[in-house]
Length: 303
Image 1 (cartoon, rainbow, N blue to C red):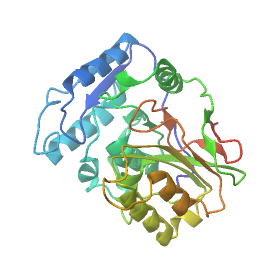
Image 2: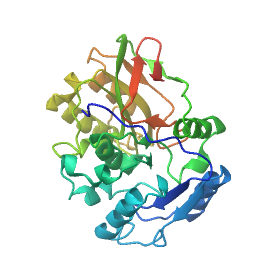
Image 3: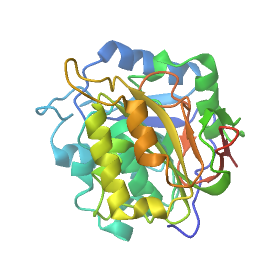
Image 4: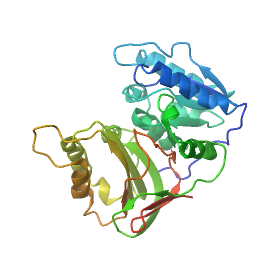
């Protein structure tokens, strides 16, 4: 765990933001353009890389090109924040050359905002390993679907204002304070045994996922249990598990039953049904900051 997390300087209208596509190929062009306009309507200068719609199989270009776009944006002294176009898959491929503290994220004299979720989990966790806080928040292809309060929450955080607590369904377990580490469950599971996997001591995990059958969620959470990692965390916040329905004509637990079965006996605070994940609302969650999880009252509060 980083000894101290750096929160980038607050954004201000007029700041330059760079748009990159570090993961999957951009398909939702209309949604993407609406997302860009949301940031521009707030007064930000939004610069889009020329290769934003390049496709290399299911990826948004070859690995070296996507990595170069990320490195260029990170090292650009004029750029104050990086907006990720979409998720999908691919961010882990451009992190293969990084080895812990040798990450290029430590090379910028002025840390900047990195905003995204889903497959961007890998970049957010890599940034956290470098001691810098990013934001688990809507992508440019999803932000236009957010309700006004969720949009305001994101802008509040990156512009230097406090966040209101989030309310969910408390499972009990008391109250815990720790370092908030949001993630897509599938991506986080595939970071096991890599340099990107953080130390989980004192962590409050925040998980969400999409289009994973209940048995797949079960398999991933069983791996987390068997690894011993869940014995170290202080609490678990659960967002939406969208379109994780039971397959037709197949005996199955529901995803809610799987979550209860695999997490309910950990004797730590757990809160489910929090408003973040793949289907709006996707409330912004800072990475690596102090948070309190109240498993009795069902509240996640960011310091």
